Length: 145
Image (cartoon, rainbow, N blue to C red; front, side, top):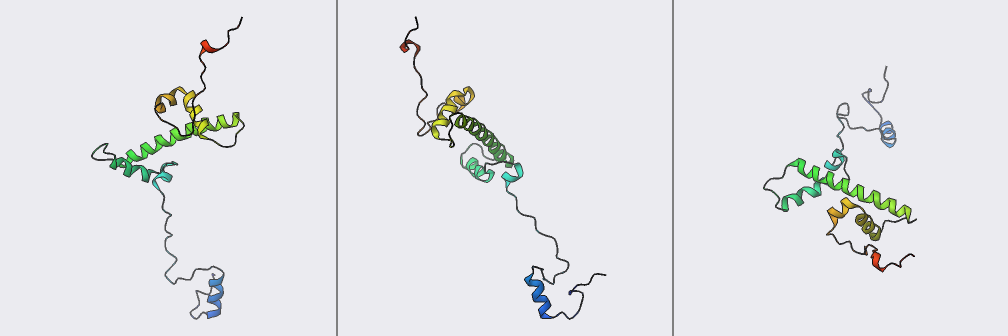
């Protein structure tokens, strides 16, 4: 048999106060009802780091099409997320090889210029504080005899 102060008709104020102080919820509205599920963002639902909610208005304002579907922004955010992860992985490897603990713009520039696919995609992009790729023409190098 379940014995609790709620089963009794007249419960003292001291008992209620003690229960309240120890975290027992006393609402008096049935059996507690259903707990509300925590809201999940579109990015969290899709398992992405890029914000889908920020990409969607940019797609609408960009005049790419008259209508933008809900899945289009998720797809674009997934593509950006993949591209970001790829560049950061390569830059992290370059930082570890150079015994650095931070990824700086110079490392991003070197990674992008040394990767053929990224160079094709981001060749026209200027990275601030990225510098240039070291290149010495073979004609200028001293000749070996």
